[in-house]
Length: 211
Image 1: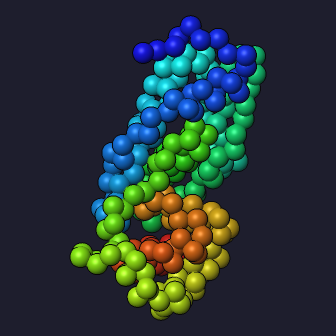
Image 2: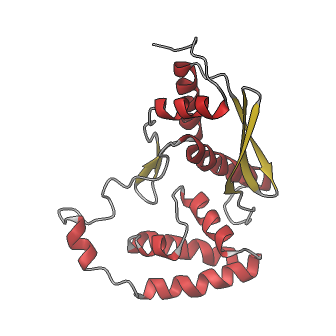
């Protein structure tokens, strides 16, 4: 049932109604490396457009890359809203793709996270408990973790060398890692919560970016 005849007093009221009507899309893409799933950009856009039709919100949105940052611009009811989103990772040249493909992938990732943030969509990775060994509860696994293990130390050294080699800020480095592995790693804390196999994959990828 749609509400196409609904009248809103302004852009913010219409946007609020749209956000309330959002139905969380299914995580319809898989990440074999992390044995996880996430929401694709197409699914994010479909969810937004479906909610827009449902509440009859007469708004128009688009994404604009500005100085390596993805912005979401929303127009409607004589008003405009511009929201800063995710940074666009640079082409590192070590992904087995050409520059155009790498740039397209970076922009797709930035659009997905930026739109999800604006419209309240949960597009982050869901590992379905795969990080824990089979038959072992997550809580038990956590008590056996070693926060200051060898992989964490290796990551510290490799990540610094990677940033120095490529002229990346720490934020841009984490953005590039997140894009490469289709997950949300934005700090050392989130890296520390990964399992050893995932940490090794990231460290090896960073090493490739140093050579």
